Structures are given as C-alpha cells and as structure tokens.
Image 1 (tube, rainbow, N blue to C red):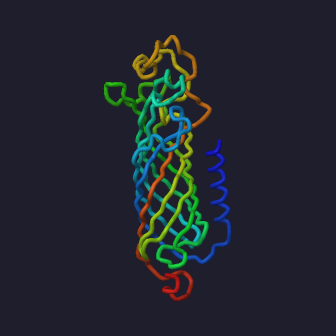
Image 2: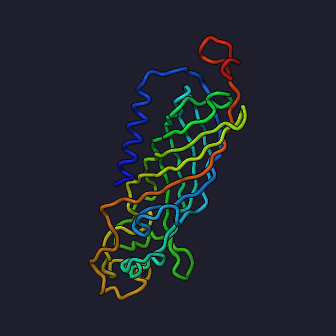
Image 3: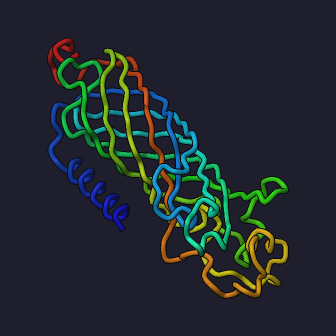
Length: 271
C-alpha cells in the first residue's frame, strides 16, 4: 500500500512540475552507466527490502531541457531471487519455494530536480530529484531443487493451461541525488521501485493444483509434503502484484554541445 501511494505521489509531482512555466532553458546531453543492486518484493519475500539483493548494471542517455527537468532513456540488467527457507513463516517453510530470475529492462523516465542543477555549473552543482516513467522488461523465473536450474514458466507449477507472459510492462519511479564532480562529469545515487502488473516474477501466485494437471511440476510445486494435503489451498496471494527494484550509483558524462545555449547571452556566464 505504501509503495502504491509513493508511485502515485511521484507521478503527481513530476507531471505537475512539467506543467509549470519552463525556467532558464538550455540543452544538455549526457551518457552514463549505472552500477548497484536489484531485489524484489512478492510472495516469497513479502516485505524485506535489500535482503536478497543481487548485482545490477545499466547504461543510459539523459536529455536535459532546463535546470529543473530531464528525460532519461536506458537499459538495466539485474537478478532477483528469494527463498522460503530463509523465512520464519510456517506457511512459507511448508511451501519451500525458491527462485531466481534475470530482469532485462528498457525504460523511459522523466526527472524533476528539487533545485536547479547543471553539470559544469559552479553554483547549481547538486540536487535531490524524483523520477517516474514507463518500462518494458523480460523475466524468466527458474528453480533448482538439486538437478540444475529449471525454467518454471513452461512446466505450469500451478496447473495453468498456458504459461504467463515473460515480457511485461512496469512503472518505474523513485528518488535520487545528483552531484557534479567536474565540468564534464557528474554522479548520482538513486532508489527506484518498479510497479509491475504480474504476480509471477517468482512463479508463485494462486492455488496448489491437482497434480494430475501438471505431473512434471509436482516436485517443484510440492517439495515438502504429499499433494493431497494441499490441493486447492492458497500457494500465493493473487490479489497483490510483484515488485522489483534497482538502486545504486550512476556516473554520467556531459556530451559536447552542438551549439550555443538557446538564450542570447554569453555562454561562459552559465558554465
């Protein structure tokens, strides 16, 4: 609930900021790299942030239109994972599910700086910022019960008639901090939740199925007990969707200007 409220507020702030009159326009282009971590919140990890973090990385292009607003386009890779064996919940220990999944994400994001900011400016050299946008991503949950990693979508662990889509959309949003290092280079820190529209990042969502519907999945769906004890009971919570997260450090480089600033003043005045 808190995460849903946070991304709604982020959207409202970002888009209301863009609706304001533009101030001190200029054009700046940047390329950068992102290094950090990724994790998920869902049926196997219900509330522990950062606990199951895995390394993540990305690249991006940022186009700045003035001192307050910017657009970012990029690609991120990260792995998410979790295990019921690490939980203290009796239901999760009985279920004993685990998974890993590689997330490949393309995103388009709008940024709003709380104070004026520009790389290379000796006055506007740091800011907090918020962001929100749209992303497409690919996931593919896998499990290993001692015989190597098995892709779960095609064995129908919950008796699905067909597999769930591996290509999905998400809504990225979050908060960060930007700081100038030199005239041509800046760094940033950010934390970015991704609101998804799937409950199968971890391959857990609905009921324990009749094993006859998917015989090959029995050892993945019922690792701890006989199927007759659980058929028809809740394996996951289909009322909530899964989330994934990226957080970390970015390093960005200002590209050479193709022309002078759009206002008719001495360029060196604002560099």
